[in-house]
Amino acid sequence: MPIRVMHVVYGLGRGGLQTGLENLFSRMDRDRFEHVICVLRPPIDHPMCQGLAEHARLMCLATTESGSRFQAAAIAKAIREVKPDIVHSRNWGCIEAVPAARWVGSCAVVHGEHGIDVDLIADEPRRRIWFRRAAFEMADRIMAVSHQLKEHHAARTGYAAGKITVIHNGVDQRRFFPDPQARSRSRAELGIAEHEFCIGSVGHLAPVKDNMTTLKAVAEFAKRAADWRVVIFGEGLERPKLEAFVSSHPDWKNRVSFPGLTRRIPEMLNAMDVLVLSSVTEGICNSLLEAMATGLPVIATDTGGNPEIIVNRRSGLLFPVGNVQQLAEKLALLRDRKDLRVELGAQAVCRVREEFSVESMARGYEQLYDSLAQPVRRG
Image 1: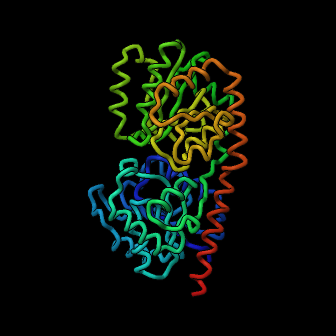
Image 2: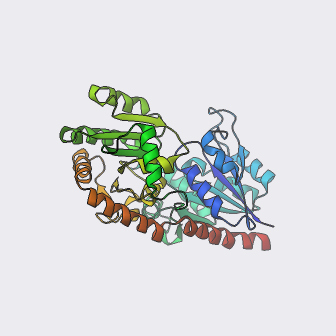
Image 3: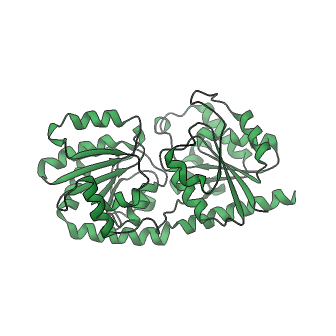
C-alpha cells in the first residue's frame, strides 16, 4: 500500500504554496505515495487549485472564512477519517495540527516552515515562541525550505538547528524555459512592443512582498528612461494601494498593468525582460525560481532565502530591502546592457538546473516520508 500523507495547510488559491505542492506531487512516485490536502480555510475550488486536484484529494475543515480559529479537534477528527501514515503541517497557521496528530497517536508528524510573518520578525509574542518550541519537540521531524529559515527558527525558539532538515523548493524546467515564440505571443497579447523594456513581478499582492518599493523604483527609473512597461501578476489586499500609486502618475496609464491571477505564468514570464522581487522577507520563492528557469535576469532583495538562490552579480542581482535608489539603478543597468541581461539569464538557468530542480526536491521529500513511515507501519 502507498504511504498516505495528509498535508495540512491554512489556505489555497494564492501565493506559491499550491505551486510548490503541485510541483511536488507531480514528481513523487504515485505508486508509493498518496496525498490528501486538508485545508483549514476555504476556498478549495479556486481556479488556481485545479492542478492540485489532479494529484491529491482536497478537503476543507471550515465552510466560511469566519470559521473557528482553533481547529485542533477538527483536525484530529480529519486525521481519524483519513488514517494517514504521516501528517505534514506547514507554517504557524497550521501548527495546531502537530498536537492534534499526537493526540490521535497513529501517525508520524512533520512540521515545515516555509516563511516568516513580516509583522512578527522583530516582536513575536513570547507565548507564540513557546508554543512553536513545544510543537517542534512534539513532531518527529522539523523541516524548512531554506537554511536562513532553519537558523532563524533555531535562534528564536532555542530548538537545535542540527535537528531541522532543509529541503529547497524546486522548479519544473519542463514548464519553465526560455521560449522566443511564447515571448512574441505574450508580448503581443499584453500590448508590449519589442523595443519596450518590460519589468515584471509575480506573486501575492501582500505587504510582505513590498511591491510599492518596486513602483517607487520605477518612478525613479522612468526619469531617465522612455520605453518601458511594468506588468504585475497576482491578487491581494495591497492591489488598491498599488493601483492608487499608479493612478497618481497620469503618464503611466498605458504603461503599468495588473492582469491579476493566471495559470499561464510560463508564457507571461517569457514576455518580460527582468523580474523584480522586492519582498521584505522570503523563504524560497517559487516565482523567483521560475523566472530564472525561464532565462530572465532577476533583481531581488538580499533577504531570507533569496541569497541562497541568487549568486549576486552572477545569476542575478541583489539589493537591500526597501532601497528604492539601488533598485532603480539596477533597472537602469539592465535596460542599458542587453549583454548583461543575456549573461545573467543564462547563468540563472544553469543555477536552477544544478541546485533547484523539482526532481531533487521530490527525492528529498520521498526520503523524508520513507524514513518516517517505516517505523509507523512496524509499530
